[in-house]
Image (cartoon, rainbow, N blue to C red; front, side, top):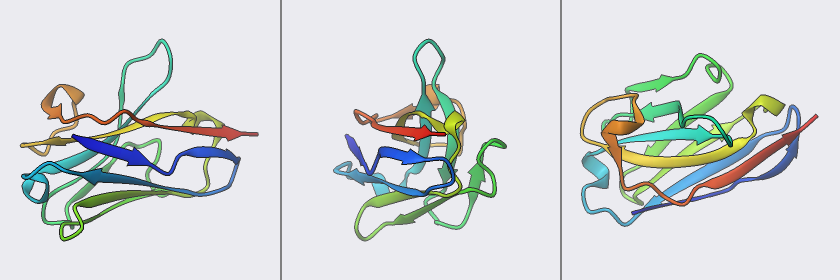
Length: 120
């Protein structure tokens, strides 16, 4: 299972750094994805990172503002979120996958999520 942290209430233009800590034995060999969800909507892909740490992918809505990174020694993945916008408000989740996929259905070991609120 994964555990997210780092969420909070910030103003538009501010930054937050989310962390995803893992107790999953295969974490270092798994794709890790960040997703977000708002009430009444489906869970949305945000970013993903390959086990090699250098193959990255972002949703168009966050490209250029968010940066995903990982530390396979510490079994953590971070999501640096800069220039936050009110539309980034959501609960953010991390999860693992065996494939470099985008769809949430390929991911497992979901955490409880961390809430991000961006006020204008």
